[in-house]
Image (cartoon, rainbow, N blue to C red; front, side):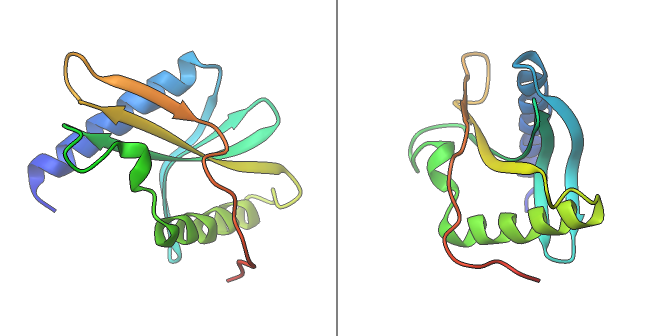
Length: 126
């Protein structure tokens, strides 16, 4: 990944974390990685553990950031989420997948939070 894109991603995740905090979320972890995948931000919204994917777009040429969470990416997020829940003895807790979309990153960016952005169909084990 080009260094510019990496820096953009780091900045977007920092902005998303601040946005989530201002929205009442408690940030538990950023850039969680396991052998099964990675999650940009893991947070708590009241009693729910939220696995948050952050997407940033400089333009709408390729669609909005929120539209970039493909089925394959959803599966990867699910596996990483299961790993985190198991590692932290949280399998009995309520959990969901959210997306924070930063569109037109820059001075006039629009930040959108999509709670329950997707549901998982099928079984996910590891």
